[in-house]
Length: 434
Length: 41
Image 1 (cartoon, rainbow over the protein chains, first blue to last red):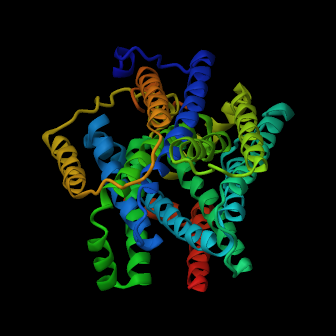
Image 2: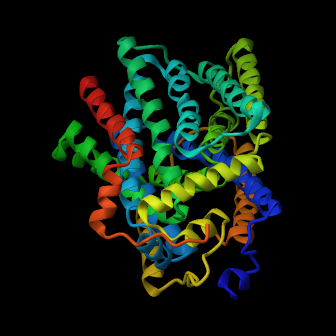
């Protein structure tokens, strides 16, 4: 039977070569995710006025919401989202649940930084990748029959990254603990557990065939809904509105931060899909390294600090790179991928999802008989509306008077764009964004 | 993986979600996170 997948030039039968290609694609997506998630911090550094962390989070999540609808509409069209939902409607619940987990974790990090400082809080919540490995192994057959070398690569790599992250966090920390240390530790650990557990719905969705672009459109309802509820609960509607109104000069920068973050998150979703959460999450956790590059070279954050600080930065960066390399070179073997497929079959049986659809999507292609995604006038309207919101706030934005180093900013931006171009092209050629 | 799985109704799908242990782990963690946040305030 000549399927559309075949007309797209994709093999209907998974082969070892294609499996290898998808693994490399997942690793590349993880790297790109780290770079873009790290860069998302840059626009927020331009915000120096005194608005509360909760309001900052809420505005960023609004930018995230706009991006999570407009980017999928632009890339595949919302018809693709609707088709995915018709095939696996139960995944809406999972996506909203994951969004709620993200929002609560993000709010906990605010308290953790306030109470124990970034240097202690970050390594604690960065442990989420270790929890992700645990859930991946326990629930989704990841690292089963992987052999001790891959186990050492993934677990060892994640641990080395945690140590590197600790050094970087200590070096980049500017404030000391402000009391309530035990409370801060609980908040940071709580954020790590919430984020680590958030990857259960991620993997669930991708094992059942959902497209990452569809998953994030529902994820964001949980994210924005929970974040709005927390912001109103903490600040009350009136004062929150007042705070948002007074911050209109900087809203654009925060929305932009949210938008950049979504690009990184989309690549993280593809990494979770093609290399699993046990490998995809540690790879994208390299975002701290990129964030620090922006901080040091563009914003001059460590200028004038002691040589021991620079030693910590260099040591931490090398450890992060070593950990990333170890995880990247531990891609899943054929036996392990067979176990992934068993987990996918189990999910398909449980939720009544067509097996050819699940199999095709795990192989990064459309199922036979599935119509090609198309964009309608509504998609273009959605993209135009989101763009208009950004333009309106950009017109209101104040350009902050900060000493910026433009040459490193240009170099980092070029690096980001090259990674975006290469990874997007690879995703398009290999999977047509499925 | 050749076989088709029987299509499920909305209620049986919901039942499948609610009887899936994978669902209750994130729910329990979310509730614990909300309790922790409440404690933080």
